Image 1 (cartoon, rainbow, N blue to C red):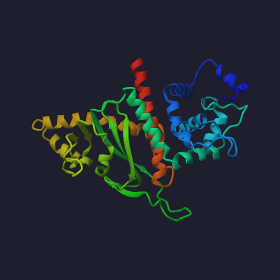
Image 2: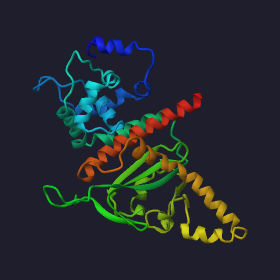
Image 3: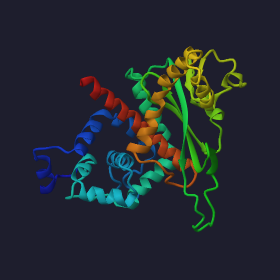
Image 4: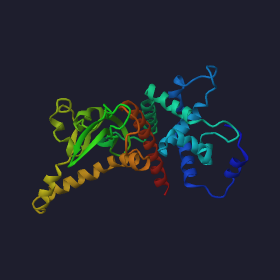
Length: 323
């Protein structure tokens, strides 16, 4: 870490800590930095080949902050100059050099090129599994559409060819779809896939199972899963919701269909946990629209976001347990 400037020293001695400081402090203690850095280190530039690189730990922390606060590369560079808590979290000081937006972009490109986002996601899940946080009795599956720019006012005069449009209800969307498998006990994402928005949810189901489930919970979009060739022989209880129109028809005669309605409410209460990762992804991390072109780059970003989302959920559970 660089030597602290007078401004940084004054900042650390102030009376009250901001929410950003508290959050970054908790993440600093919670995240298994050494294990994650070990996944990137073989691909990271070594000193002696051109300009001396910034420490890997610094660049990884900057990348995580960029995803937590949904910042572009230039905005992240500005934040390192302007926000002392973020600068200290990255181990930087105004007395030394600060990574510019090109350096930040190159680190992201390094992760994309070698698909290291997926490796970070797997390493976080392995760490959670080893610590006993995961419970593998059941899986909840779901998918969400992430919209992309549909305008053709660009250099190629065309929309992203890897994105597609699809209809949901009476609305049309253009973009991609994130499919996730979530631990039914904790609500942590253990698997995910990235597809164009028009890909049917059922097509990705087998990729979202870890293999040790006793039951799988899903919404009505997964109806017919027990009849599919890849899943019909699996010894799994399929808790798939009925169509909303069918449930509305039952509610017209609540006394006759009391047990059926109660069963659907029970399914919905189990399935609710799958919405939390999407809430974190879109509301807290701000990933409501596709940032990059192509599925590969966005898959890498989703991998990092879901890994950070799992860590955030663990932090929330720990704080809740402490009261």
